[in-house]
Amino acid sequence: MIKANNSTVTGMDKKSAVWKRSTWFTVVEIEVNSHCNKRCVYCPVSMLPPLTVPKFMPDEIFERVIEELVRIDYQGLISYHFYNEPLIRRDLEQLVKQVTNRLPHAYQFLYTNGDFLTEDRYHSLIESGVNHLMISSHDNKYVPSRPHQTVQYPKELVLSNRAGMMPSIATVDKPLQQPCFAPSDNFIVTVTGDLVLCCDDAKRTNLMGNIMNSSIEEIWFSRKYQEMRKHLEAGDRTVLPLCRKCNSSEFFKKGENYQVHIIEE
Image 1 (spheres, rainbow, N blue to C red):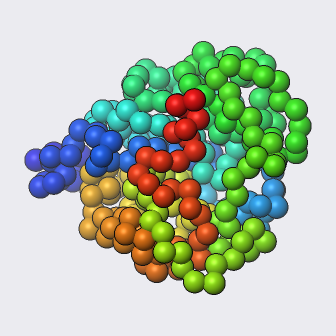
Image 2 (image 1 turned 135 degrees about the vertical axis):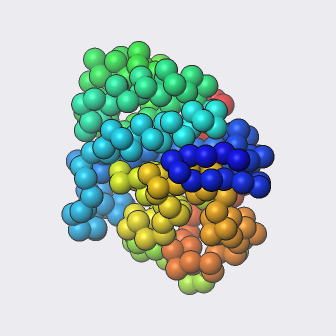
């Protein structure tokens, strides 16, 4: 048995207690803060009312996430966003250093709109342990060339309708009959410690658990989570209203998304 915060994990969870790419998530997204300084017309942030969650992730939640990842020897990607701009956190480098020290085999992938990215900030992030920066220049502002950096200008952005929230991007008359491995690849922890099913769930409506109440095994291998993944991997997008309206085909195969290809390049 494995015990974590007064919880007990047995059976398949015990066999899977060490991270393996085939059975675990390959991307962890940690919402270290909940706000963004932009209101892009193709993003749900431009439409949603003000959030009623904390502006910054409390230290105890961040530390709990890292502790759980250390315990399973996680070696995949880690990023610091959901629908937020992570550089709003002036102490982001301290969080990055914690991950660098405690999860040395993880790959830290930072998404930012670049508005707060000065040369000094770039170097401090790299020195702290960020492996690669993905800069989305939403205003088409020039971004100087740097190592360990990819820049996307508006014409290069891969847009989706965010599970139907952005009908100006696309609408879906009937659910796509196409596999989706987003919930099989991504482990998304919000600023409150909640686990959302998908990166397109901007309203935070489909929660799989809370990292402060359960171990990673209990959440990831829960019957609810496994059933969702089973349906979506088989191409059944009728499983949730969120999925029925989604036009995304990005996560068509486990481990296959644009982040991986950027790293490989």
